[in-house]
Length: 126
Image (cartoon, rainbow, N blue to C red; front, side):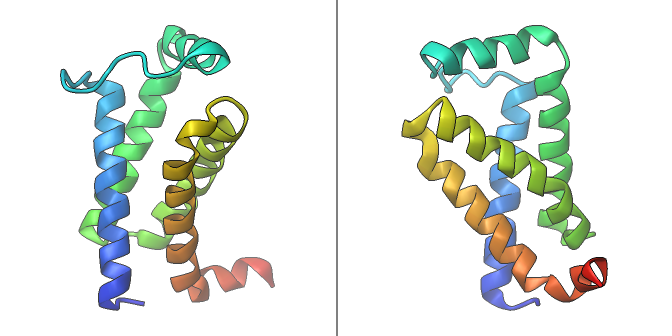
């Protein structure tokens, strides 16, 4: 479970979540503010205008990223991340196809790490 490959995947995923979670709470100057067009832009704008959705998602991304980086409660963090990665995938599949590659990468990293910790999840399915 703690091979070097697993550690690298866990840290890469954790750093990515930390960065994108922080970007939802703190608007970095070097990142474009409106990178989406059409329906994707309308959807993101409506989430942003709600005042809380993107902040909650950002908070959970930061929390999960920190847990993954610190190697604390990793199976729990991966379980929390599953619905977020599913929604990232659905957003890009239906509203922003050009961004599907990073979404697939996040899904793949989460799936590989869940597979590596499958012993912990097995009792849920008995």
